[in-house]
Length: 617
Image (tube, rainbow, N blue to C red; front, side, top):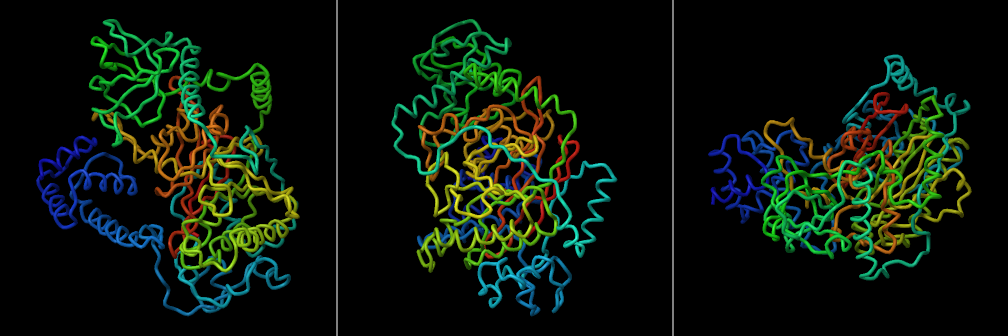
């Protein structure tokens, strides 16, 4: 069995550091947990991804941690046998319960201070006592929960600071003077302008009535659009039929697909070209001549190579991106091209780089042991102290995977929970902060109170008194905040891609960052969800997908919440002409019964003038 394990590791692109010792331990793991060699390697890939290991090398030093990962997987598999119970992977959360008794009101509403029996209430808490509106339920103050007794509140998990020293010193000074919050709040603050870009499904639209024809047209249009863009760049010739036998080198554009229902590998990978160029025929790809590649089903690529037999295209060069010079206006009507040109020109005329501060958090917003929404309450309390220009909240808000929601044991309807818990706190926050505060809300397909479809229409919150301060965005969606273009998608595309991707990288190259590579696929494919077929549980409607999933140009910020470990990374895309984009995974605000993470960001026009922190709630 050890030879089979070694072969599986090598097939997945991993090398073994201390081969004999590692294989012996992996063999033991297989026997103890009744795993096949392919299972043990699949589990290692998940462990490798979550730990963000730099090199695709299996080291003996990681075996103890890997054993713990396997044990957690086995325990989770046992829990999932109970169909009525779902638990988040709070094994990844460092949740130490504090044994000391604390004042419950202060624990739940308090500020990040030293452990003590009497904590000083911040400005937000004082307002709660004055008007009784800041928090939606008084029952929160009567309960002691694991979240309320957590440690390491608002600890910095990760930080990037590219701001000048003066700016950094000012930020530290502001943080040290939290007691002046009320003075800070009544001072006039610059408002943030929010403009929504693109189009998507409207609230109340008809969905999940797409036909086979809609699926065909969506995939065909993606292939044709890529082909037109690559030819328009002048770097590549007109695509040819890759399934026709030819001794000379040809250029073909098509979509990667798998010959079967298993995972993609070098024996099952196919290239399906467009109906226009090959009648929709597919041909097997031979990858031996490519030293570096990254493929997944649904990816549209350009391939240079030759097909001497007519049965296999031997690839010699891979083009997996659209050149930036033509990506923005390819396949657009003349009217839209003109509008886009005017927008780009207006952006260039603006010589001053605007500064924008924001807090970004993704659901779930309540822990799995209750529906008190304590993490959301703490986040809003923190936001009142920091006074960001923009607060971005990404679903799920009423999580369909929450045990009480899943079992149907909640006292209220899903809409009532959303109104009385989430929207009440949001409205009170905006009223307290004043008319300059801005909030963006994006739903999730896991929201039990919203349409189960992707792409997904925005929330309809017209009944709120503060609706002019809230921007409701489609999922996925693109908006502009003070000339900073921001793209958001709450479907976990990073996790879905990580389970389907196959890649190879030369040993001479620099260490490969898999998380950056996965995120770069979104930008290179110009689609928020380029994976096809979609992952299980994604209610894709192809009749809505063509424009709603499209990314016409690279945004400055790309927010992709994921169960994969939180990160903030600067991506470079575009081949010869590169453009940089800051990709943000804020993590989940609540994990199991404990707290998760969120992101605080100050952005001044480009990644070189940016300060980003990932904090625990």
